[in-house]
Image (tube, rainbow, N blue to C red):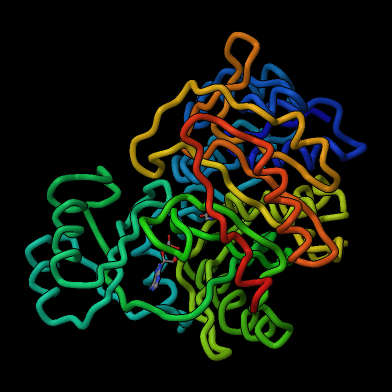
Length: 423
Ligand code: AMP
Ligand code: GLY
């Protein structure tokens, strides 16, 4: 089979790496890919959001399957386009992807189905939103309605921060159209957990739990990023919580979507906040998490390809997924300055040495090849994953690999999975 993975980040490198292990896969393409995917697949110079060019490539190459990594092409309707052209693709349609691409849509769906989530109000008028701040108890969370590369969520500890976030999103257009409407919601305390479900329209299969670290600095300080690291399994997950999750979240959300006439096929990933054995939904994502995927897939023993195929064909109920019992820890190495401005084109050293370490897998993200060297090309540059019989040993090994790698200005968190080790 010939498969195309759309995207060029660490998640896509992990998806291509996992799919390449399938005995049914002959060729893998990545569009646009990165220097890491170039080592295991064929990079195609088409942007992840150039939908007509992607569809043309799929036809001309007679692809058997396309797997979509990022949210933007899904929100733009790539699945609708491919289906109309009779091309096989893994991911939700544009209307199903609204569960991620509009936080207001997701909130309304949760309200209608009584799905536990933070209390929220939505605004399309900035004066109203600013006035509303006068009657709030802080902290609150301000969210841009649309997609903002994981950066459209501001935790405001006081009224001044809230007002400046509202002005920046609604009046200054800091996230473009995505921030013209906003959600202001109650700040939830607890610990987070990411669950990934392969949803085939009616049924679903859960993948192993994971946890990511969204803030840029140690101790959960600094602004939110796309994700600075992850580990799997999440330590705050249990069979009891899983039952609650299925009853209070998964079944109602699929019912809610069907009530709207929406069939969701693809990967649904609710981000949860767990406190005193109760969970609430922070958000829904309609694609694999980044960097959770880099921690989850190395633990998956089963072939990913038939799982994706069964999800598309409405047969996920017949699937079982085998897992490696070992823990995985993923540390993201980012460019200095990320999630703000950063430099690119900086040579990366030590990749080969780090890759030689046992049970270590290096997934590349913002990288490209220039004059025979691998250089930085984005904010999140690498995701370094290690497996270990305990979370502690996975963590030690991941950081051993990280310390073998260097580039000018590189930054990473020192406390990824630390809470999972020290309790
Ligand atoms: P989201 O994109 O909605 O998942 O938000 C990104 C991150 O912001 C989450 O992973 C949380 O760390 C934080 N966050 C979002 N909503 C809330 C909330 N209501 N209370 C506390 N933290 C939140
Ligand atoms: N890890 C956060 C995300 O993929 O949205």
